[in-house]
Image (cartoon, rainbow, N blue to C red; front, top):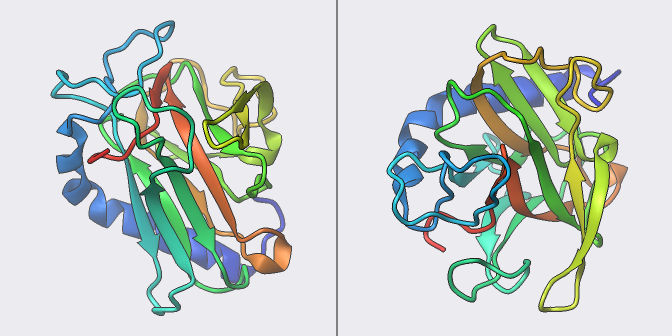
Length: 230
């Protein structure tokens, strides 16, 4: 979890949060894409895209790289993920940082159309050959009271193991959303409304693998496993 990070790493997170505020309006247009997942889906029904919902949840990649280091990438990549519900691209979300952690750069993705929801389920599938540590990748959940809640991959509970059509192994990760949670810091008070959700990859190659693949980003049982144009 984000503990005892140096001053530069705090600046990176601050910069990323500033970027998110600036681009949320522009990325919201992707939320109605045919490949987006339905925000209205009940928590006990999993969907990987709903073609009829105008208020759909989507996961839109971004790259924060003000210094033009060209060391970060965020994109939905075909042929690297689990089976898609719509189409045969088998997309996965690639997040990289091929520089030191102190470099003012990060990759990530915004989850659109979540403002005002109450979180009941949160997680993703991470490919076992990619990074899964304290800070890379992680969810940043900002609630209506302005608090940023950190949910990092290393702290999540593994609930299942899956294999994609390419033969890669994936770990299904889920976070405890109760008030006693030890893998969301600080815990989210039940019933608190969400302001924004993003996933961030900001740790570099000095601390381990500089990349990871995510799939089936889980927001209240809705699984987003494709890009907005997937």
